[in-house]
Image (cartoon, rainbow, N blue to C red):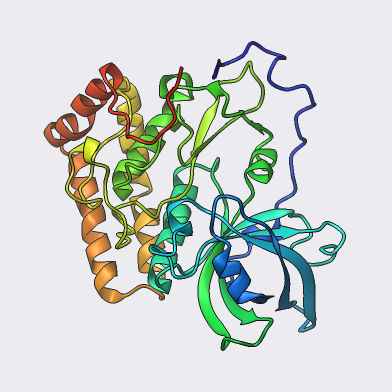
Length: 350
């Protein structure tokens, strides 16, 4: 792997101009559509070497007119691709620019679709985590909640309607923010990114109880930068292992020494006291906004909502108690900076 390059090495093409907001992700309404494909063929195609399968997507536009778009779909993901984990795997939707003009998908090429896996409840929970991070940092992935009717083109299964959500393509996200994705080959450590943004990201991951991320290993993290003269920013995604989601299959790696994913563990580096104060102040200012993401969602189970509000309460009690904050965040951050525990399975950084 390579070190962070000197100016003009990383980008040979001009940086993108500001992208227009994509209505697909600015609209908060649930997007309802029908996805038709060969169900059996797709379900069987979960190995490392996978292929795209023909599909059609049908929805009704704002004028009440049915719209049909031809596309290709492929099973994606790592753990959730395993049939022992997910009964229905996450999908990659691959659109052709020729078939999407004048549709809600006209500005996209590829989109990740997070599906119900083992149940709609967990889709909603993970979707809301993305919405929370949208509050924490505008440099984040946009998402769109969907209700999808899955139809087998062979007619061998009854149609099934479930919740899902679309995730903004990483290149489109970077373009919207007038940046580009820093290639994974270029090693970026946490202390080489924007300190304030990194501190917010690290504390956000602590808030949701997520240890399943790494900046240098690019594990569930994309790094963006306007150019090589600018300080890069880390952008997180993929939260199914977060304690706040509490997926039944989510188990913390033994190296971390925690019993469950609900047990919080800070995985960030140490930051100056001034940065800590600024970040704590930010989370306090936006506390009501963060809680409203959950209290304003009518799709959540009432028991889960109560548990989640209590989980958030615990976070705020920690960051607003100097002694507790020093124990849970400051000291652990100092330890992480000296000797970071690397989870087995991540690629070795050279």
